[in-house]
Length: 232
Length: 232
Image (cartoon, rainbow over all chains, first blue to last red):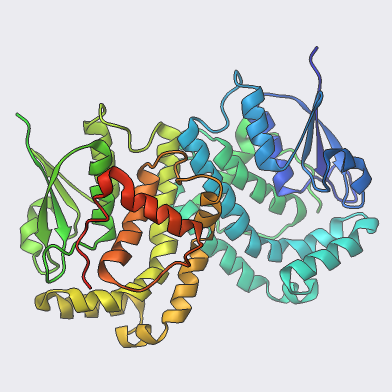
């Protein structure tokens, strides 16, 4: 019996506004595999709704009897469980290198971008999520949203600088994974979708090769990511 | 007729002291392929000696009628020309991702490390190379070697921070390329060999997973890199 895959995804006040970069990684992974998915809107205050996963963060994927959390674990689960669908990684060497891309994105690209986006995200959250979000994120970043709003120029510059190795790579190949996109691209596509859904800020210069790649990622798999609801 | 592959490699005053990170990438690539190589010592002032390659930098690889310069181009040449030897990259996806590692290493890891090493390298060069090296490198870095020597703590910290995504990846897998080393590892092994050959500075904390990986890279392919002549 075929079951429907469900994905718990972070949303704003508007449940159609899905903005988590990690959830978008899983959405891209499912699209690449050609698997349909039913979104289960989730907000920060709904800890009970995902308590069955044994932890408190999304994405959480439910596939029949299986529950998987953490975007990397979800990608590996889909690869293992659906080997006849197009591979997300390619062979083991490519998977190992994709893990580096995952760590680089989370550790180097996200910190400056979070400082640009989090004050905007605060505005689009359900009222019950706002205080929690502001206090935990301000503590995490060591700065108030008010201060971060005044530092946008600095963080935009840091974000663009952080992208340098990606930029240089995309000068000579259309995707990070080469001629066609793979999970390495989806990791970063999730990052840019996070930015796109929650903020009208212009992050890239128009002639940046990363901007052209971003358009290709919005067109990928029938353009499902381009159709996402925006918060603004 | 089988010809011997020759590799023009940068050396210090002592021609056995080979310290270029890019030449070490090629040495590792040749070792991985199981190809023997004859080193052709080269110094900055020997521009004439490699003029036949149409440019002025090493590594330059000469394989029969073929001349190839630039470490990435050499790796691709070896992969293309010796397909029956173990693959340096794996499939196309892995090669595309390895290019990112190459760009990340050159653009993110090398800048702080160069600021730590270049003053030391100056001391080991042949006298005819020293003025050229100091003036071009000080202009490139926008700082005198004297100033850089006073800033070591700052650049060491920046170097260790730059390695964060590598460190996190090596916490869960023995090599950047997974269970066995590949060209992605050799890129960074070249970087650490650069440091090891020319400087006695301690770059990593002993419990750093990168330090354990560095030892594995020194053991790889019969430990040829561990046997390198050191300048100190």
